[in-house]
Image 1 (cartoon, rainbow, N blue to C red):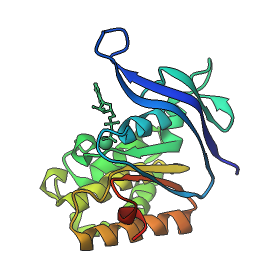
Image 2: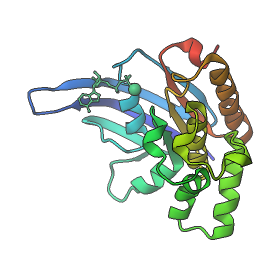
Image 3: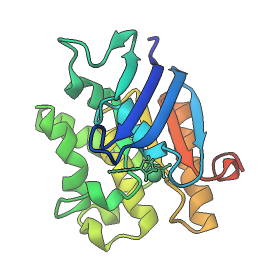
Image 4: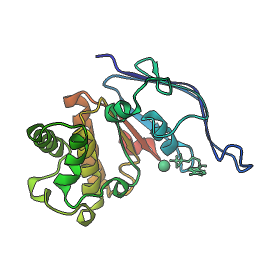
Length: 211
Ligand code: ADP
Ligand code: MG
């Protein structure tokens, strides 16, 4: 399997044509490969979150092209739905993506949407929760009652249950204390090495990703 994501001269401008243009990304050229563990570092407002949303097709570049396995993701006939399954994104604020009544229901949501059978949904969800480091006693807990670190892990489990090729984490450690952050990064490294998932992490400082 030779996965690649390639950005060619990508620009992103918020509010284009409104007279309030805001350049978020300027002429980005970048290639991401299989099994890589990539850090994207920059201060607030440098365009990290915008970039993550372009990578999985949530937003469309103002100009330039993005290729997934050398296919233009804006091209006719290209399935964005499939792309979002293959390129999973955990948002900067994970509470934005947790909405079910319990941890297990939240994680099962994605695979259920794929139309898998119950046995497969259960298996994927349990495996994903384990890989994300969530213990069984939290399965019936409401996501809003979890700590910041646990919420991030549940959000990751929800993405892993889709069995993505790429896992994108937008500033995952910024709200965590140093011990939780280091634990969290160990979990992500294991996902990269043991599952072979490509991992892309954005942070403020390089030391946050590669201490
Ligand atoms: P980062 O994640 O690195 O903090 P962002 O991608 O969120 O950066 O933002 C990049 C730039 O785009 C910033 O200048 C920000 O103010 C601007 N921006 C982000 N979201 C919007 C929006 N919805 N409308 C207008 N400008 C935005
Ligand atoms: Mg951001």
